[in-house]
View 1 (cartoon, rainbow, N blue to C red):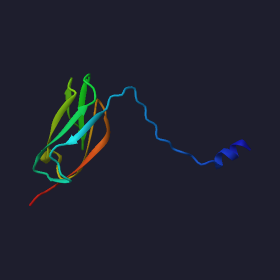
View 2: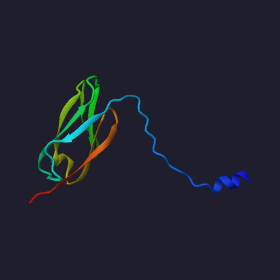
View 3: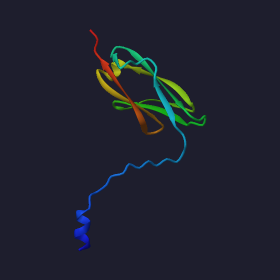
View 4: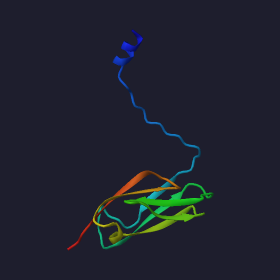
Length: 110
């Protein structure tokens, strides 16, 4: 009887966040608009809320874009032609990408 009752119960999915530090960062696109020509070079600034940062990495289409060590703030150059035309999400983090993401739409200009 117990097995029959448990089969009727709906499943619930809950988001879980596991965090072992209060480290966070802000990611700011400096010269991207809502859309940008693919021919351009752009800049994304990432700044951590602490001074003891071992690395900051920028991720986008295809994985790791660039990384710096032992800096709490940096500005990454983003080469539009290397990414190509399309919508590209950017994430910042340490060894693995972390949210939030910033979507950038690169288009081919005439």
